[in-house]
Image (cartoon, rainbow, N blue to C red; front, side, top):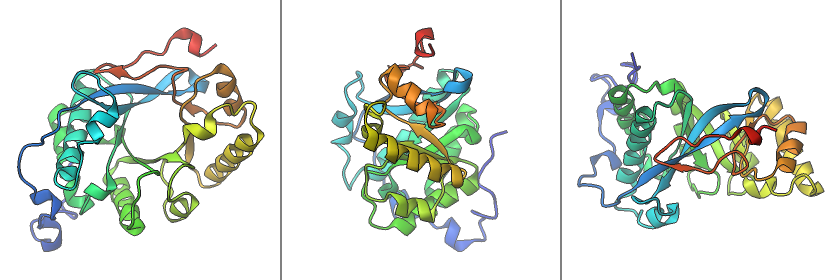
Length: 264
């Protein structure tokens, strides 16, 4: 059975937990149409798919920016909630047995113990285990209240979800965020991965991040891998999880298949 929020967290007798937060009281239908494409995250050592990242697309497969440009202060919460539900529904419909990675908008989460309820509801409805859900936030999204983001991550971990910091090395938080919270995964930004096989500064930076993550027991994932040479150099740094066009492009409303030659 899919777990629900523990009674100790959201019991009727707990007035603080039972109150609706400001965002959860927003009403009205979402005025944004969108779908998902799913891109594999692979584990190189076992030649297997570890997870699929759900990537927002327009209703006919249009780029993500055509959807995200419609998100504003009046619909951000509803969009974030709809993204979670649709990603879980799609993963279940496609028969996904791997981890599902979902991006969330931290500025749309008012109180994590309340805002997470729609995710639990979707997991129960579509029979998708919450322990196979990864919530990731891009380090490039400006979050003025970092303690709030850290609290979201800690609450999500407590509920049984896995957590990840996306685009690490390209955003506002960097090592300061990592010092306060250690997620399950750190996803190295693709700009640091590009041409890493021939670029000594990138090699040194990624090797340093990999060493830090190993010391903190955080698994590292390299994004944007586009060549065999990049793949092979990352492997020499002990990075086993990878994602990028070398393995497969996102598949619209489908689970992208990794071709045999991607492992060779």
